[in-house]
Length: 222
Image 1 (cartoon, helix red, strand yellow):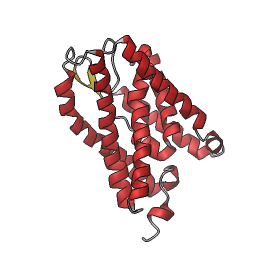
Image 2: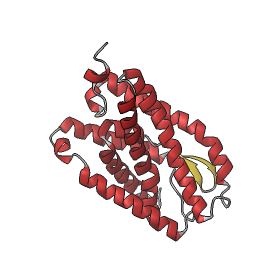
Image 3: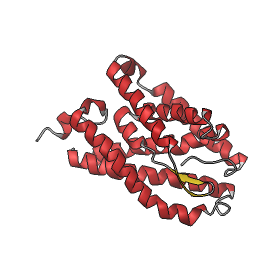
Image 4: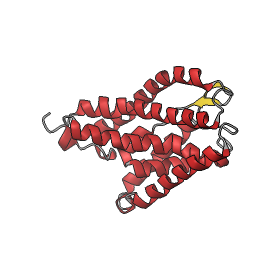
């Protein structure tokens, strides 16, 4: 979901970049650095997550000129590390892609907003809503929080991208509207499967890697 050069007006890009920058600064400020630095295993899992994110974000599926889609994986990162560290990881990966010429530096803040900030914040909010309103059950955590949450986060990130292009008046120029909405449901299902697989395997084999999962809470009756 990287936004490519020429798709946004300067005013829209400035506003979106500012929003992405503020969220990034807040993520750095509020991230649990003390706990992170005190746990070497947690650090390696975070770095490994970034490596996987870099591989996934480096791949893309082109539909029309100016329109490309890719999996985000931000739901898995948010559930594993919290939204603060997920956004920081996304920012570092996006910086690498920009350095390699695979993303535009001028659109860095906007791409960060669409690809990391929006899905990470939504996932954190959605998890809180599910946790507070529904029974604490492993299947609810997996199918609702992770699977459905990943699909919704992916669609929301895509809609924000479309809204930015619509505000810039470039949506018709790249014919992104109908084609983009047609591909979003298929890609969001794939996003849900990938995130669900990652979280499912982590919960089974290394539950302590998933910060949002407490096996004493979700599995205490099993």
